[in-house]
Each structure stands twice: as C-alpha cells, then as structure tokens.
Figure 1 (tube, one colour):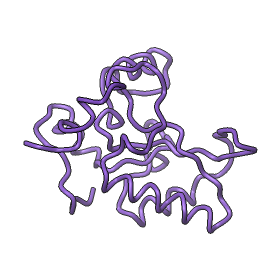
Figure 2 (cartoon, helix red, strand yellow):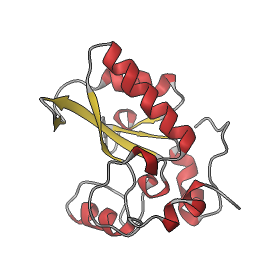
Figure 3 (cartoon, one colour):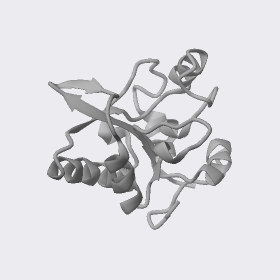
Length: 151
C-alpha cells in the first residue's frame, strides 16, 4: 500500500521531532489543498487564520497528552498528515480566542471534520480529513484515505 504517510512522512527528517511543526508541505496533498482554500476563504470573510500545527510526531503527541491537551495518548490524525490546527492571526501572533464557527462552516463545505463539532473534547481550531469512525483503521495502518474520500 502506497500513500503520503508511507512514502513521504516516514522518510521526513522531522518524523520524530518533538517540536511543533506548522509546515503545510507535511499535509497529505489533497487535504493540503482544502486547508489552503479554507485560509483563502476565511481571509475573504475578514478572518485571518494561520496554520499553527500540521504534522505531529508520536513523541509530541505523548507530551501533549501528558499536558491534557489531547485525548489521544500515542498517535493522532496529525501524525498521518491528515489534521491541521488553524488559529486566528492577531498582529502576526497565534490566538485561540474568539469565534471559530466560520472555520467550522468552511471545513464542512470542503468535506472536512471540524473539531468544534465534537462534544466530548471540542477543538474549534482543528480540522481533519478523517472521520472519527475511520481513525482506528488509520492508527492500525490498515487504511488511508483515497483522493475521493469524504469523511
């Protein structure tokens, strides 16, 4: 099985980095295009967003879990290049304040999952190209989305 995770991410020099990575090139190309369109459309609506985190290593995931910032202990959708955190850009700096409903609307309009819809652990800055029901298969390595996948 060939996919972006196996062919690109596993060979990337930052694959095991415990640092935050905000490089859109580390997002699966179909998902990346959707994220970049969301940024453009948000800007057209007067909302300046910035990419805060794209790829996340298992090492960083474990640190965030220990800090209570995620419910997933060892791996998350970010690890596969299928999730991205988009935050407000205020004077060039990231901000988690304010209303992110426009992000939710834009995410859904591009067939993405918006973390603000989650009831148990809402994450209004998070978008992903993987339905929650498909995450176990993704984490086991038995599935990766095809270009025409709709969560």
